Image 1 (spheres, each protein chain N blue to C red):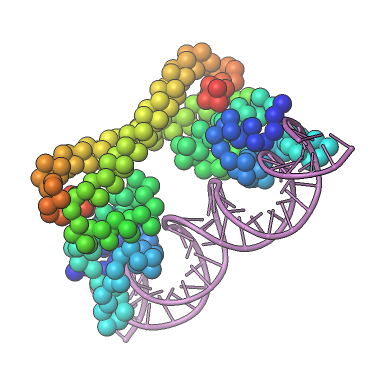
Image 2 (image 1 turned 60 degrees about the horizontal axis):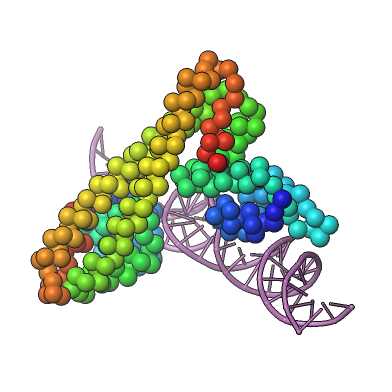
Length: 131
Length: 131
DNA sequence: TCTGGGACCTCAAGTAGGTTGAGGTTCAAG
DNA sequence: CTTGAACCTCAACCTACTTGAGGTCCCAGA
């Protein structure tokens, strides 16, 4: 049993974000103390961590909501599996794109460091990137 | 010389986005025909592509604006280089995180495919992700 | 027991980075 | 000369939060 502040810290997000998720129906309405303060337990934390993890993948809130409903239903793998396969494919594309960019930057930075130091001419990295 | 539609297609973005960038001062005020239609040339395209590339890296518009100003000044490498080094570091962290997630998903999906088909029990991928 | 400051509450407004829509002009192919 | 795609402006909407105002609650130390 812990407070919203502790929950947020454990899930690596902000307190208002937790309240926002509750308002949006992603987190269930939290139990309250007499005072009105929200109280959470382990399953709540698990759910929040899952939401954050999916958000890191840029899965929209609506989609996460649908998935959580699916999970709650204890449905068989098939649907869920398909979703995560798509997700994984998206991740892989993104990794490829990032690697490509990393390479471009690295190559150019090597060039630049040897070619235009000490503070001699303008940097043409912009030209390289927009090519 | 081309129209906003052609420009947008070449830079892989939408027409309203181009206008939005102009309004925000990221793209210079475009030249116009008598009719009021915007006209663009190669340097405009280069600039737009650069903006898009930086946006793909989640660089905020304000930061891009500052960089473009820096570029226009023909400043020496040092500052620019530092920026791109930071950017590259961010990319690498992101790649690591994504790879980690990919691995987690892949391992679990392999499990799942052998363990709970044909449509037998519920999928525990949610538990795995929120652990 | 009192007190101060941090953590909590609600509700409203603001933010980034666009997208969408209404209502209207212009261009170019047939 | 028409008609449909592409352009124009301006305003409203969108997602996913963040920030702020104004107020209550909790708890450790004096």
